[in-house]
Length: 188
Image 1 (cartoon, rainbow, N blue to C red):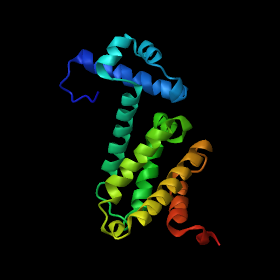
Image 2: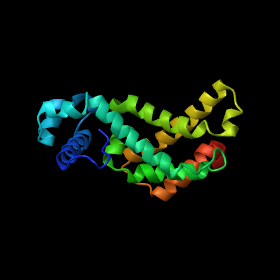
Image 3: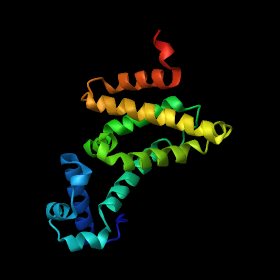
Image 4: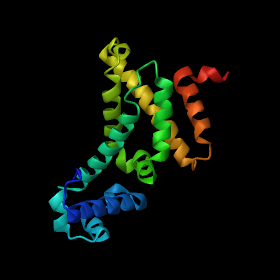
């Protein structure tokens, strides 16, 4: 349930408790292992109360995904494709690195693959389809370009997280720009 600030304090507190408990559980276990019963206990509410605000856990997860993608899209709203690809790449890694453990779990864990795909598609469709450059390609070429950028960018970020973020963020951004936009030949 998206809060708009006009809700009763009890409603805001309940929804916030639900979201906080959900985020805690995401950080502790795989999505398939989370139950409404467990979430309700963590949020200190009845299961019935959960269902007053959400139909199921998928709806709550979609809301969380929408929040992440909206915040990221806001950061790149003024960038143009392909002219600002380096800025978009920087914004992606900077946003992702600052989004927290819940974002990392959703982005990197296999049990969130459907939501990962939705997150990337929503982001790509929102920005890329506004590009005249991108629209100049046929549909098949567009899908290949999107796949290349998605897989490369998210793959680099996942590897960085799996490596416990040992490389400094700025170095990661520069390396990803070189790889994604200049290719492997840049390293010869």
